[in-house]
Structures are given as C-alpha cells and as structure tokens.
Length: 513
Image (tube, rainbow, N blue to C red; front, side):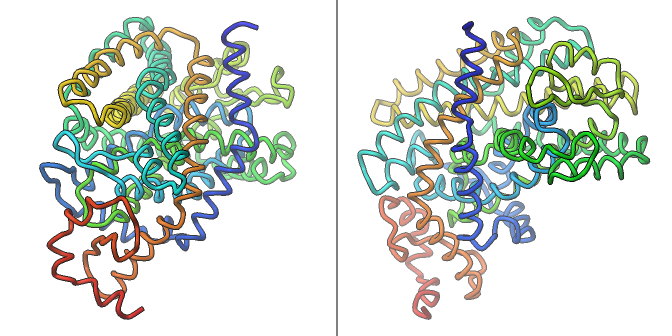
C-alpha cells in the first residue's frame, strides 16, 4: 500500500459513522439545551456583532467575528462542496446546509467556553479548547491529557498540515485560469502569508475585517449573475437537490439519501464550518466582552456566512450542469455533467474541486467568471491559513505557558517562519492527499473536542440561561459573575467585571429566582 492509499484509509476510519453520529447528535442535544437560540436570535446576534469596543488586551466583537469567519469560509466552501456532490449527489448540498445550521449550537458552545476559560498572557487574552479541557472537565487527569493532545494538534498539525487543501486549491485555480505553475503560485502566497502572520493577532484581525466582507459579497454577486443567466434551470435544480437529499423519485439521484447525509453531507459541512473542531475558540477568546455568551452568539452567527457560501458554490455547479456524481462503487460515474467539456476530463482524473465552480462561472461570464472564482478562492483560502496560524500560535502559547516570555516568543516566531514553507510544499502535492491529511487532523481534534463538550454541557447551559435571564430582567448589557453560577477556575472574570460586580446590578436576577 502506497502512502496516499494509507492516508485515505486512515481518513475513512476516523470519519466513519461514530464520528458522524457524535457530531450531529451532540449538536441536536446542544440545540435543545440552549432552546435553539443559535438560530432564533439573529437580530440580537447582529446587535452584539456591531457593538463592543476593543481594548489593550482584547479585540472587538467584529474583529473576532471576522477572524472566525475567516476560519469558516475556506476551500471547503468551494472545493469541499464539489467533493460532497461527487460522492453524495446533489442532495449533499442540502444536508451541508442543514448540518451547518444545527452545528451552530456547537459553535455557540465552544466559543462561549473559549471566552469562559480564557487567561491573560503576553499582554492579551488567550483561550481555546486546551484551557476549557484542563480546567472544565471534572476528571482532572483526563482533562489534562485531552488538553495537551489538542494543543499539540493545534500547534503542529494545524499550521503545518491542515493548510494542504488551501494551498493546493489556490494553485489549481490559478493554473486553470492563468496557466500559472503551482510552485510560483505557492511561493507568492507563502510570502504574502508571512507578511500578515508576522504581525500577530492584531494584524490578523485588521486584515480579516477587510477581506472577509469583500470576499463574501463578491462571491454572492457572481452567484446571482450565474443564476440570472440560467434562470430556467433553477426550479428543476432545486427539485433535483431535494429529491437526492430525502430519497425522492428522481430518475438518477433519487436513491442517494444515505450518501447525501451520512457521510458527505455531514462530513463536508463540518469540514466547511469547522463547528466541533475547536478551531474558533482561540479567536473568540481574544475578544473584549462582559459575558462569555456574547461571543458565543456572535460566532454562532458566522455560520450563516459559511452556509451562504456553500449554497452559492453548490447551486452554481448544479444549475449549470458542471458536476459529476460517482456510483456507489466509487470507481465509475453515475452522472457526468454536460455544462463544460472539462467535466469529462475531471471524471477521467477522478477530481472534484474549484474547477467545477470556475467552469460554472464561465458559462455566464466566459473566461472572466473562472478568473473571479480563482481570485475568490485565493481570498478564502488565504484568510483561512492566516486564521490557522493564530490557532497554532495559541496552542503553542498553552504548551509553553510556564516557560519564560523570551522562549515562548522565539517558538512562536518559529511557527511564523516554518508555516509559509509548508504552504509552499503543499501547493505542489496531489489534492486527494492534501485533503485526507487535513481531514485526519481535524478528525482527531473533533473527537477530543466533542467529548470535552459532553462534560461541559452544564456550564454552557448556565452561561446561556444567565445571559438571557439578565436581558429579561432589564439589564441592557449582561455581565458575567462566575461565583453566582458556581463555575470554578474562571477567576479572571471576577477581575474583568469587578466594577459591575461591585455595583451588584445583577443581584435582582438571582434574588427573583
């Protein structure tokens, strides 16, 4: 067995049915626990997103929102959706959207916990799954083991290994549109990557606030243009998607419910949004906020951007007939699209990725459409890799928290230098290997993080209920007092909100109970 085949086999083992059940099942439990507040408070989420100021130690809610959105909107929203369609049929897009909305409850949980268990370090707030694993899991030895393992994955696996799909898809898109060699594209983007990550979290946040709105709006515009030029296909395409998603009677895709949901819909949705991976809590922890639920709600809202971009990618490929679908045997094709001559070439090479969306855009805007998608993908992937760097830095900060500042900063600079080198290497390997290695790392992180979230469900519910009880009691800006809720190992909050706690504005909330 060669290396690529071994990697694919490990990937399939880790992303088998148990992880799918754990992810979707726990997300549903969290939805019930927080009363579906992850999807019923859009107006409040928007208000929290647009309010709040930064400080010397923390970022604003909008800055951290954009940093988190940079994680979520990535190559998985384009290339990953195409992989889901190839293996799971058109209905996989529907299940990706449903799963993303449901798992936003996990996004609320892990980002609230990132805030809850944050610490002050190096003149800024730092947090992440390793902190809430160590200090939140009631079985201390287990919590410590989980924390160290997760921090190792975050500090080594994420910045060095997980960037593979981003690097590879950028190179593939640029080659398809401009004929640029992979190594030149990889080198240019690697240099640009270093220029941003060398400035640390504040430069990353400032960059994210510029690129995230720009790239998302631009992608929506190109989707609208494609839909207008293929308006007559929209109805039949939607019927095909829902038939495939729910086991309808479509002549070709009607029997693909299992593939659409069980593996490719859920797996690709989770890989796209990152909910459950524990990717976003480090960025969430960097925010300046009076209550952990603030950032939990704000960052759960970022899933809507992920859903929008996934839907755009899927509908563009499907409505233009620029997609292929494999048979259950995984070696022959059930369907090969006729929207572009490239689809046969893609089938011959067993490839699914950004090229499908480029060809879809080209049907509406010849040549220019593919170029726009290549640029959009580059923005998505580039911003995600920048976010991946911060996740690596935060994990390393946890592992070296007892070291002196000079040692920690030296190691962090090591990551800043080595990560762009790995990015360049990944831009020159096969797409399937890059995706599989990335997914293996995320699967390991998911297992650790989701098990931790089982233990921490009571604390998440306390945070959620406390926040909304204060709003109901007329407190315009809820603040967090951990002693009132009996949550331990979060003493930093007594200092953050010391003035508000001293005033005792929230006392009435608890006295009325």
